Amino acid sequence: SRTQRRAQLDLLHRLNGRHLERHASHSELEARIRAYELSFQMQMAAPEAFDLSGETAETQQLYGIDREETAEYGRTLLLARRLIERGVRFIQLRSGGWDAHSDLAGNHGGKCRATDRPIAGLLKDLKRRGLLDETLVVWGGEFGRTPASQRGAAKPGRDHSPSGYSMWLAGGGVQGGQIIGQTDPVGYAAIERPVHPNDLHATILHALGIDQHRLYYEHHNRRELVTVNGGQVVHEVFGRRSDDGSIRSTAPRFPGS
Image (cartoon, rainbow, N blue to C red; front, side):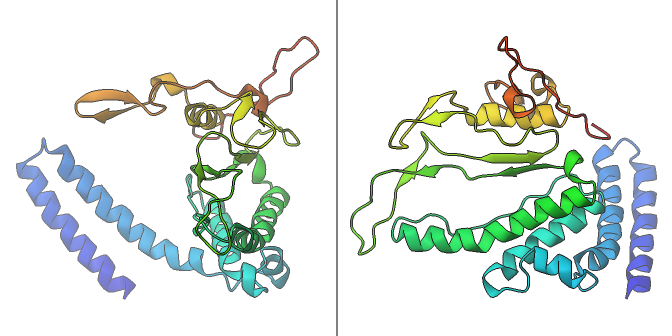
């Protein structure tokens, strides 16, 4: 029960406190104590956040929960919106099964039908609740598909293509209605305004108000940039080019950034 878990955590806290008194310089121990407390708080808050039964029928229909092909992903995205409302700062969702080396039409057709309605519902729901402007939504994968058929299957598919593929962003100061970049005529490689993954990472950090050149992590006793070799912010995402070719960036600074 909740009371029992609280009592167990309090006992553990007292024992850890006694140990900390004898080893006051152990910052890792303090971090462990805080982690236990945070874990308990999350256990208490999670059941309410994960309970979708209080959502209206209209909202559930918006996410496609009333339809078999969209119900699973719709519930996932509705849960994401509830976590956003409760202050969760980073949410990663997964839609697997896109690696269509065979039967590309059947595979991608089904995956698009399963995800299109729910993601549209999420964007609409965030906007009407006043959350979209402070929520950056990034949709994409790690590679695209080649334009040529991959032989060897009764229903041909496509192989991996790292040279030309698309991602989209919404909310968080993004100026919608734009297409940035272009592939060659057959869709094999980006030839106009190509954007490297490092540039995408730099752009996401910029939207969050984070200077990519000041954000490091420790790796083998070395300070490494999150964007590896650094990236170029794609300012067009946040503002349109003026007549003189300049770009006025409108990237927000989220609360707490």
